[in-house]
Length: 172
Length: 305
Image (cartoon, each protein chain N blue to C red):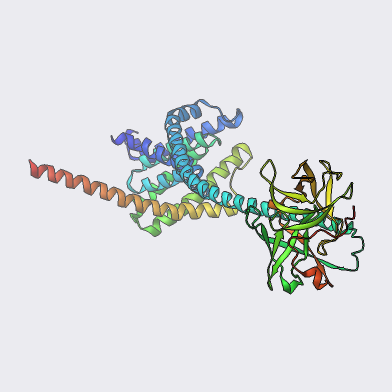
C-alpha cells in the first residue's frame, strides 16, 4: 500500500486546492497545498522521493489550474529536491525551521515560475506583491499548522495500531 | 561509470527530471498552450476523484447552507408576515381615515348648503360628535351615545342630524357624553310635513319595514290628505326642536287606517345602524317652553295644510 501514498497525498492536496476556496472560504486560494505537501514530505523522504513527489504534484497542479503544463512541475521539483537536501544536511525539524523553509520555498516556487514564464513565453503570470505576501503568510503559518496537526494525527493513528496489535497478541 | 551513476543518482535524477520538464515547457512555448497529451493524461487520472469530491462537496454545501437558509427563511417569513400584518393594519386605518374624511366632507358640504328658513338667528353653532355606542336595534329603547356632553354646550332636546337627514334629539347630557333618542324610537315624535303636498303630521317611531328595518309612522293623516308613496317627508319646525326643512324620510306605504285616517309608513332617511359621526345643532337661545318634554309632540291648533 505504500506505493499509493504518493497519489493519495497528491489527490488530497489537489482536492484541498480545488474545493476549499469554492466550498469553504475564499481565502484558501492563497494556500499552495501542493507546495506544503512537497515541503512536508521532504522532511522524512529521500531526495529521489521528494523530487518525484515535487514533479508529480507540480504537474498535477498545472493540469488542473490551466497554466502552462510543467511550470509548477519544474518549480516544485526544485523545491522538493532542495528542501530534502536541506533537511538531510541539517536534521532540524522545528516549527521555526519549517516556517522558514516554507517561506523560502514559496518565494523560490514563485520566482522559478515567473522566471521560466519570462524566459520561455515573455509573459510572467506571477502574482502582485501584496498577494505574494499573503500567499507567503498563508503557506508559512498554514503549512506549519497543517504539519503539526498531521504529525499529531499520524502519531495517534500509529499508537492506536500498536495498541490493537498488543491486545491481539495478549488475547492469543 | 556505473559507480558514478549510483553515487550521484539523486542529482542525476533531479537534473534529468528538470531537463524533461524543460523540454515539455519548451515544446509548449512553440506550440499552442492548453491541450497537450500530458495535460490530458494527468487530468484524466485525477478527474474522477475531483469530480466525485466536487459533487459530494456541492451536496454537503447545499445541504448545510440549505438548512441554514431554511432556518433563516422561516425567520424571514415570520418577519415578513409581521410586517405584512402591520402594513395591512396601517392600510386599514388609513382607509378608515379616508372614509371618515369623506364623511366629514359630505357633512361639510351639507352644512354649507343648509338653508333653515327663519332659524338662522337661532342657529348658533353645529357641533360634530362621534357615536360611541349605538342601541338602534333595541325595540324598547333606541338610543345613541355621543362623545360630547354639556361641556361642549349640548343640552336636552337638541336636534341631531347627518347629511342624510334627522337622527333624533339629545336626551340626557352629562358633562362628557350625551344620549340621543333616535327618531325610530317608540317614544319619539317629530312634527313633520310632506314636502310635495305640505300635509302635516306627527312622525313617530316603533314601526318596522317589510325588510325588518325600523320604520316611522306618520300619524294624524286624514284619508283626504294627498300623500303618496315616494313623497319626501321633512321637519315642519313647529315642535320647537327641529328646524323646518330637515329630511326625515320617504313615504313607503300608504294604506287605509282606522276611521277616516290614513296609515302612512315612512322609511327613515338615515341608516341608524351605520351612524358614526353626527351633528348636533346647538342653539344659543331656546325658549323654556320649547325645551319642555316634547317626546310626543301635539298637533298644532290650526292645520297649516
